[in-house]
Image (cartoon, rainbow, N blue to C red; front, side):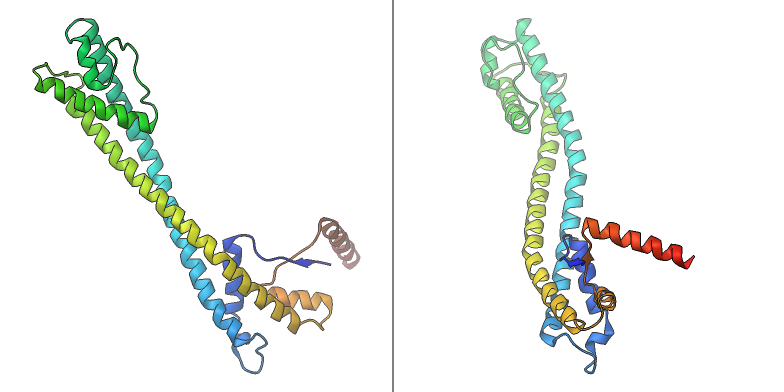
Length: 244
């Protein structure tokens, strides 16, 4: 005996509701067997779910597109900050810049290795300190570093930061869209449950195969258990062999 099961996916929910809403026989007074209250709830439920699905799809697609761009800009910013700090440390090692000047960049006097700039937080922190430290040192009379210049470092940092902030906003929008989608699903499932109960009630006295066929026409979804699938397939093969 097949069993009924409410849809698990939003696409299946929309398909089940659409099947009912597009069946003209349900709207005639003589043939109507689904009450108006349920039918009137079905259309708004369909519209709300469709809108929520589309909004989530649009925001999620935009978020995915931004990921590749942000990764590329982050790599560029890391490269510029890394090169600048390496030149700074080599200048200190050659005696061109005093060790104490490293404090302006948030580094120890004896710093020889780069801080962690691979993470977003580390990049933004140390990148900003590099920019401010260089500006302060130059204001105090120091010679600017030219390869790369702090202007180029700051530009790539700003570009990445803007993209990163946009990506955060997109993630927040996607999260809100997903919350809205999760909120509407129980309403849709409740409407579908009422629809399917009334549809099955209408065809309850029909023979099993006809009843299943008529309910399926109106969007009711049935599943066979694994052993039932095998048995039905065997019967179908035997039937075809006999007819042949």
